[in-house]
Amino acid sequence: MSLQVAVAVPFRQRGTDRLGEGEFVVALSLDRDWFSPDQAKRLVDVASGRGLLEIDPETDDLVPGFDPDAVEIPEEFRPDETILREQSTFERALETIVSAGVDKRTAVASINERQRDLGITIEAAAVVYARERGIDIDVLADAVREEIVGATPSHTDGTVEKADEKSADTEGTA
Image (cartoon, rainbow, N blue to C red; front, side):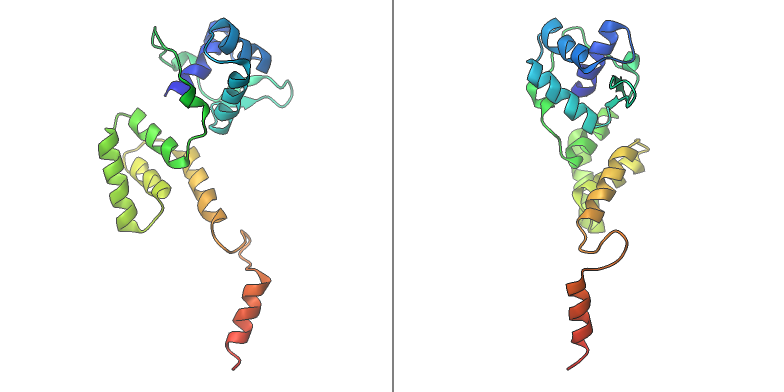
């Protein structure tokens, strides 16, 4: 996962488990020359959205959401700009599954099969597939749950729109 590697490098380079955003941006843009300062800031946003970086509310420092020392950094590693774009929940789930050692084509075929068989979204099918294989995908499962709940016409508290109630009341009177 190249995003995780790119995030780990500044922490390992400085030998710390927290960095100010400015230090993080300098490490990626000036020290490594991997990104422009704006792109490095974008990387902070993307990594935060994926749970790879957290912001300490007391100090505003960036704190990795994983152990940077546990990440293998290939000697010639250089991230490309594609890691700066937001990935869909499905793309993130598939990346997690492939990172766990599952062949990408096999995973996609199996996920598509589950989607058809169960009549669920592709994202939900990916979570089911990952869990069947014992792959930790809880953060993405929560995101899928939120997407599904957010897509329903009823409110999260179980109530429906007033217009729906009104039409339901008048349907029986004719």
